[in-house]
Image (tube, rainbow, N blue to C red):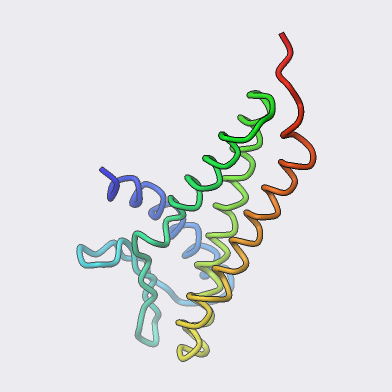
Length: 145
């Protein structure tokens, strides 16, 4: 079931990423193999970027949502803020897939570093910033009624 949730997230993200890579002039083919990758962005010059279950963003959505859910604030604010925050994380994850693909295409030796450090830092910093916004602007507002 969890694998299905990952695929449900990875499929559209990889399709959108592939679309934008093509718009940027890269000759790519999107593949959904049965191996350890849930999706692959294949390059015309050879090689590919593997999009695995860890790339779906599912854990990021859950951590972000749980934090907002457990803090104070109005439920209607939590609902829209969680949706907005997850949309931002989803957008950043798509940008991450595109950027890592470009890094791989031009300088494959830097893929692992950027995958492990650069983009993890960027996405977690964005989530942290969203939490700060929640704490400063919404956590102390009480439900009326």
